[in-house]
Length: 106
Length: 119
Image 1: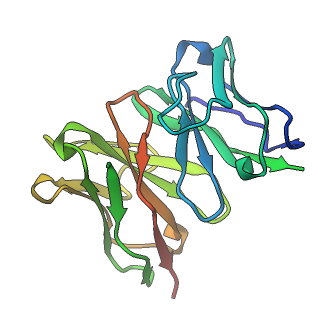
Image 2: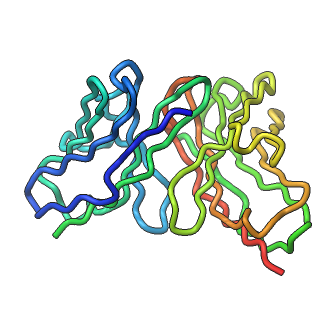
Image 3: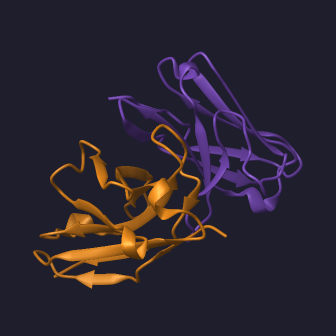
């Protein structure tokens, strides 16, 4: 089965840029979606189809996907961005989630 | 406004049956897939399966095939997730979410239903 690998944690100071990676075999050939989940809340879609943003998601959230790595980039990080982030793809008619990355804002 | 509203928290004993629900509103319920996602305490997201309410086409993750049943009643815009015999390991938060199509993202999520199975 297809595996998506995310770093367990990423830390960044306010105002800096956070990059969260999602590794998978030839993931660049797939569409990657990203979700933000704050404690006690349901996940929220923040980037879809590699780099598109749903309405209401700040432009500070962006995505890229090439080769074996997809990346969620959060610019000018704010305290309110502290959350778990999950990447997701489809493989063989199944949804696959990455293990999640906890973003800590120092 | 698209909304998915899930049924309330449940506390059950091992061996009991359970059916939880997810009611969609603000869009054409029969034109979008509904998926179910499990999140065990302190863990990540696990996809369980999806259903297309328009024709009840249902697909399961291999990990959950035979363990749960996904269904829908399009007349009341509601999808369901059910167990015939719960185990303690079914204790988790369960989310429903909307897929615009197979292969696409989960664009709207329900608030979650916490299921606790304990003797």
